[in-house]
Image (cartoon, rainbow, N blue to C red; front, top):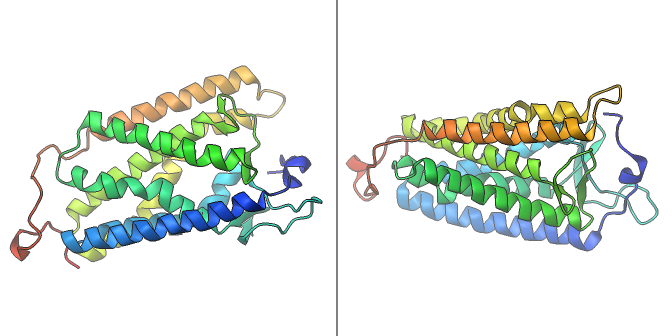
Length: 280
């Protein structure tokens, strides 16, 4: 805190791209919810819907992330005065746009839809998990390169290895968080004795989110905020590479916890064959 450049705070928000981010992202979330409900009915589980809701609610903790990673959502009008954004609350002096919640759902819950069942049934191995990691890193980069490149928000800290205006290490951390949340969520899904147990995903999401970003991301966070002129480019480069390496270690470690025994697609029309913890 206290590092916010005045030119960043007064940077005008691109109103057209704000509207695109807001309405398009919430439209995608609406489609995801429809898909999640249909999948849940077919498989008789609320897992997919709860995973989406957990990610959306988790966005209320975004200000902590913003302070640690020097992220600022543009809110200034053309003259530099604040108030141009579709904001719904502020914490630590950082205003929060309403699309953070839809953005969290898209970035952090999508993997539960396309990979969750495969993990549950033991049909996703180490190579598959690294594939999911790569897909999520690419998706994160695409989403945020657009946001940071079109005047919607910025990572103003002294990051290295940027793609356009987007720090690559952020994408790697976000991809790691997605894999961590998805695997832990599915492991809980396999163990709970009732659908009510899946409500624990509302706790799992912030735990995995901060474990990945504040835990694995600690080297780069500290390196960028060193006092006394020690936050130099070489130091930040070393910390960035260390963080990326730790992310790979985390994904590899998670692969050891993947269910190893394929059970095949379970028939959902026979009540006595339904997976544990999937009854509504």
